[in-house]
Amino acid sequence: MAGLAERRRARSRFAVLRLLWPRAIKRWLPRSLFGRTLLIFVLPVVVMQLAVSWVFFDNQWRSQTNRLSQSLAGDIAWVAETYEADPTPANLALLTQRARRTLRISVSLEPGPNLPASKEPPPFSRLDEPLRMALASRLNAPFWFDTTGAANTVDIRIALTRGVMRVIAPRDRATARLGYQFVVWVTGLTLLLTGVALIFIRNQVRAIERLAEAAEAFGRGVDAAQFKPHGAAEVRKAAYAFIAMKERIQRHIDQRTALLASVSHDLRTPLTRLKLEVALAEPSPRTQEIKRDLAEMEHMIDEYLAFARGETGEAVETTALPALIKAVADAAKRTGAVVSVKIAPGLEARLRPNTFKRALSNLIMNAAAHGDRVEVSARSRASSGVEIFVDDNGPGIPPDRYEEAFKPFSRLDEARNQNEKGVGLGLAIARDAARALGGDVTLEPSPLGGLRAVVWLPG
Image (cartoon, rainbow, N blue to C red; front, side, top):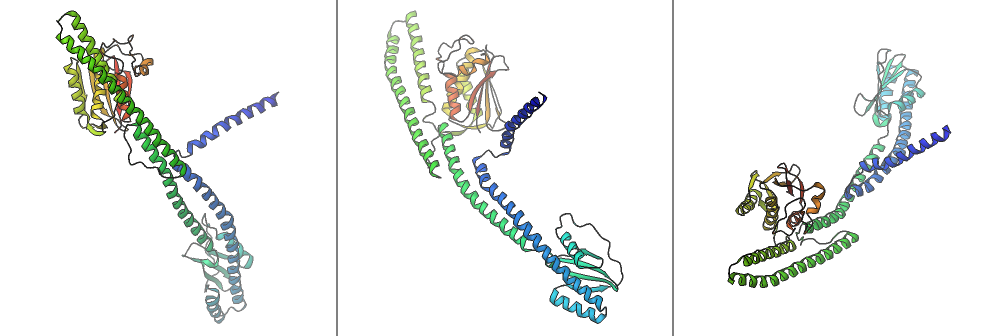
């Protein structure tokens, strides 16, 4: 039983690791298509170069270095043994001359039997060990060497009976240099090919980025006329599909706007006749009620048309927010609303002025209809863009009904007093106007005790 329980615990731990391991890998992987495509190309190349360098370069370098070290040690042993056989100045001079001419080494004899103190080899030196083993196998006398003293040379000293023979040999006689050239060439070609891959990958990813930018611009109501499909066949196919979809949506919007404009025109004609007839009729309480009904019908038609028209027909431009917000607040004050404005100078945003004025006016008038105090403020957002706050001290809305308030024709009579002239389109128009600019409108509790409408606009 104990063994079964242990196996179950091991399986459970393995299952947890199997679930967490992919998440840990994803956390370190690049998130962009460009980064992931580059990783697909670069990672195999880097792994291949590391494997080739390790297998080929390391083995070849070790083999060549061992052969060169053995050859140098053999030449030094021949010079030392030849001198020991005839330790005369004439023989030393002859050996020195021949060694310099044929063996490319410098030989000299220094007085004294003592060798320099031994020192630790450099931590990453790969020459010391092969040279030590080669000298130990060829020489029968104590020796000392230094591979780091002078540039591109190796200093070797052998304790002989008549003194210390000092041999200065070129470094390339003891170690292979062709391997480093191989690494340089491989690294250079890898960087070159990676740069070429970067250019091609960037061009392909740029096509997708332009498609995304065009889709985002169309979502904000901006017509990206300069957008043209390019890139790979699949990307061009998606771009042509997007253009066709955009044209269908634009036709639908134009048809809806034209239809509602026609309906509005058709309805305004009998409304105008009715208003004229009421104006010519004898004043009475009944005619006053008819006038109020006609005014409400006209207001409803205007709101329907504004909601259907949205942002069409107006260009996006950089607008100073203090003057625009003050103009909307002053217009609300003329209707009897109590509105105070607190906004720092210099705030700007890209928007459609008339459309945004209508949206902000809807928010302010909606707040004034449900409270006797309205405050409008704005600030620059830390990351990007600006935020505009419309606060009131009315009864507010329960948080679970915030999103319901943005639905067209939604009127939350239980939570807030009904607007006699409203049709439930004010918040919907405001949110559509903000989202068409890439921003949004949200609701939250107000510091005044009522409702706060937060308008965010990108910078």
